[in-house]
Amino acid sequence: MSEFDYDLIIIGAGVGGHGAALHAVKCGLKTAIIEAGDMGGTCVNRGCIPSKALLAASGRVREFKDTHHLKDLGIEVEGVQFDRGTIAAHALDLVSKIQNDLTNSLTRLKVDIIRGWGKVAGKQKVTVATDQGEKTFTAKDIMLCPGSIPFVPPGIEIDGKTVFTSDQAVKLESLPNWIAIIGSGYIGLEFSDVYTALGCEVTMIEALDNLMPGFDPEIAKIAQRVLINPRDIETYTGVFATKVTPGTPVVIELTDAKTKEVIEVLEVDACLVATGRIPATKNLGLESLAVEIDRRGFIPVNDKMQVIRDGEPISHLWAVGDATGKMMLAHAASGQGVVAVENICGRTKEIDYRCIPAAAFTHPEISYVGLTETQAKELGQQEGFTVATAKTYYKGNSKALAEGETEGMAKIIYRKDTGELLGVHIIGIHASDLIQEAANAIAKRESVQNLAFNVHTHPTLSEILDEAYKRAQVVGV
Ligand SMILES: Cc1cc2nc3c(=O)[nH]c(=O)nc-3n(C[C@H](O)[C@H](O)[C@H](O)COP(=O)(O)OP(=O)(O)OC[C@H]3O[C@@H](n4cnc5c(N)ncnc54)[C@H](O)[C@@H]3O)c2cc1C
Ligand SMILES: NC(=O)c1ccc[n+]([C@@H]2O[C@H](COP(=O)([O-])OP(=O)(O)OC[C@H]3O[C@@H](n4cnc5c(N)ncnc54)[C@H](O)[C@@H]3O)[C@@H](O)[C@H]2O)c1
Image 1 (tube, rainbow, N blue to C red):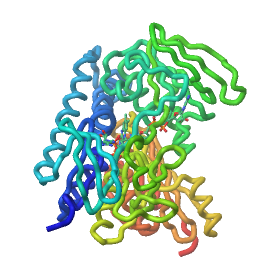
Image 2 (image 1 turned 135 degrees about the vertical axis):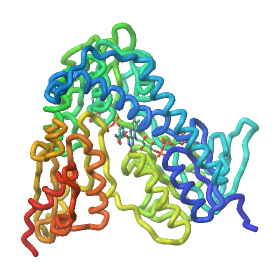
Image 3 (image 1 turned 180 degrees about the vertical axis):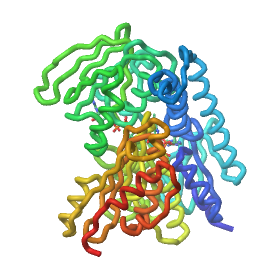
Image 4 (image 1 turned 30 degrees about the vertical axis):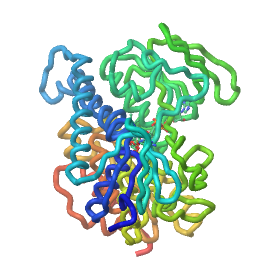
């Protein structure tokens, strides 16, 4: 008989907590998961799932509206009709299905689901504020997976109707004629894709000097040409939205990032605030173990996912997911969860962020894995190697030509001496699927010259990467 109620208690049933719980059961750990809100967290309820459902429907509308493209394939479609409410319902139904599947997968595996607000209450102890009062549980190990919430800059007022974050946008309650989107990151980009496909006019406001600052600059340039310029999108860069007042109209004060002077006041029908996310690490009881969150509120962890205090791991305390601030992605969260459980079971494992891919599910898509060219060059300077790149284009690929979808590029970044693949960046149709091959290669630290021996199916888009590996020139071997 164990001295603890559980081997593992997980706080937060988002994808991080869920991934960890499934792996814990597989490893024979008696596991409980605590959730105060919706089972499945952000990804299932307010993130990946509903946004991809909206992108799927709006992407089809965009396709059917592209009469020139269809005509080239010999197809004529007259007048595309869509129903906003049904598109919104498709997203909502999918959320409900996946939420149920996720909850059932836990109950089937006999993971105890405890509903309420969980807090660390000292070493190997948690309390939960349930509907029946506070309960205390002990566990050999505790894993924190509280996730993140939208960041709303000061001066911006959210009313949830005319000024909102992605939490409300995924419900697609209206299609404003003119919507301002603040931020040109993942959420800004994906929602500009949805809104423009469904006929809304978009004004995109980005504080930094370039749109999509998180992406490789060459890819961002193509993205601007393909995803922004031909669409009903007006853009501001180097400009902060310093004051946003909800209402009819929504009033937005724009301030130059350098001069700090108000340069314009916009009046629009609605405003989506997509300015990043912050960790949900308040009221978690971290002080009971003297854990100090960092300046931005993230829980400090090492690559084994142990929580760090004064540079040293705290025994039996783990954290994964958005709250660790490493890579705010669903699959990164569950990958971290698996790593933590492996270490809990005594098998040393470290997370390898280099091989975790990311994708924006726009039409066409953008994806990447590993280092950017700048990061690779910095590493090269530190470690004494030269970096090279090779690029291939969708317009040279038979499958892309057959589809009539020739906008796009793949760029590979590698060590010129050993050929080790360091990073891959893709824009074009199915970029989110194509990146996985590169992620697997980087995980094994494979070289481009070996990757070039892999035979790819013809005619497929995968030949875009095949061609890039073959074009790469390695001098050291
Ligand atoms: C619009 C949008 C689209 C996205 N699209 C993608 C995508 O396509 N691909 C992708 O990889 N990522 C995407 N993401 C990011 C992804 O949703 C997150 O990276 C992921 O949800 C993080 O998982 P998590 O488990 O760390 O946290 P969360 O999913 O935020 O889950 C944390 C859970 O913990 C609960 N909780 C918090 N504190 C407590 C407490 N003290 N007690 C009890 N319960 C608590 C919360 O209620 C929540 O349910 C998207 C995000 C957004 C907003
Ligand atoms: N497909 C996906 O994987 C996916 C999709 C959506 C969200 N996400 C995750 O959700 C997180 C949040 O997404 P996001 O798009 O909100 O954040 P982001 O960090 O990707 O982009 C935010 C952008 O807003 C800009 N910004 C910040 N404050 C501003 C202001 N006051 N005025 C103008 N611009 C401002 C920033 O410079 C940045 O470019 C991301 O980190 C991402 O990991 C992932």
